[in-house]
Image (tube, rainbow, N blue to C red):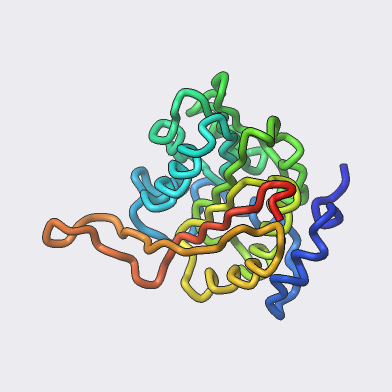
Length: 227
């Protein structure tokens, strides 16, 4: 399989989002143990879950593309599928092999929900996504392991090249790290980059509490031929 780092469009996007940090191998996205989603709040079922803010971003994409594939990297035992399932989407949970086996024991595969095991050394999960023309939204439940700049740059490049018209949702990302994604707007494959405030777990005085240092970063990719 051709490595995503060599896929068409990767080099140009890497230049656009150059962040003066070494390029980290893409395996860092999948190297953390299941359930270790990084810091964050507002998770319905604990670590590994997408926050309510991130789920809302995914749900917004699904309103436009109800038959899309949702890919969650490092989901662990997250149960976002139950809350986001619209009866039409396809769900792909990508984890290291041992963690994928653990997830399948608790949450067996179903016709539209699948868990796949991919070792940290490989980045071939994009090839498992079918019907890309129906839409693809990739979600990461927390800040990636390792140097954040390199991981984000690599993940942006892979998604932009493989999933035109898709979206990337990175949950519970420190504000300073989310700012690193903004230069990607310069690339023609990227339609928009924006951040959403993260709602912390619990409420204060009947109102939602915000996690001021964390945000959800949402990147939308241009449809092929749109620019």
